[in-house]
Image 1 (tube, one colour):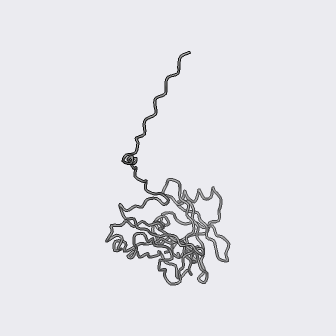
Image 2 (tube, one colour):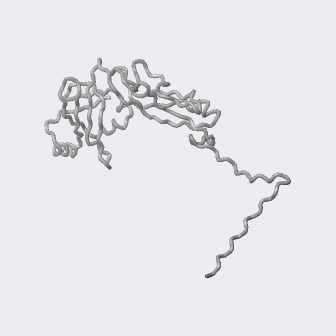
Image 3 (cartoon, rainbow, N blue to C red):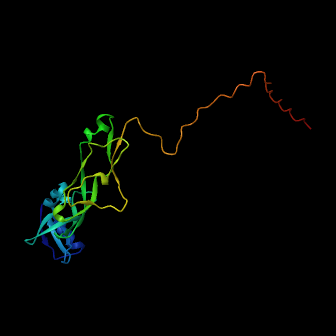
Length: 225
């Protein structure tokens, strides 16, 4: 996808407000061996591009003053209540340097899983995106997650996913977050650490032939003085 930008010479709050009034978005292009470059982009084409999922997780071509570069979208600032982009940041990428990127997860085949087909289970998506690392050429627009074998009581974890060649999840040594779970309606377990209350039992009947206990006599009222 392509973004057309121009270098902006004026900076500061007043200059940014003037840009927005002229339907431009102020931004910054940084990274690589170059100094950060203040840029301006036409608002409406950018706004429509931001509605496309892959624009957020793909290598983008930016044409800055007629010169092409490859970049990643790094940050967007929106107006608090208007559909208006207030500021945007892009990062230059180098073909030989790994990048870190957050990409969406696309789930498929959950209707075909045993938990759904046989038990009427409900699949819950715990994660909807994930941090990955790879070279720019290997960056996927999304990660495909196959749920055809998910079972009740056996959550799917990040390390269970088959990632594309050259792509790895960004995880600490023993970290393995849950990606998806299955809940079977009507089969909820009691919270951990709780036990069912023991049924109340009637007092034991006295043994045959044993004397019956007599009630204690009522206390006499105190004499008046």
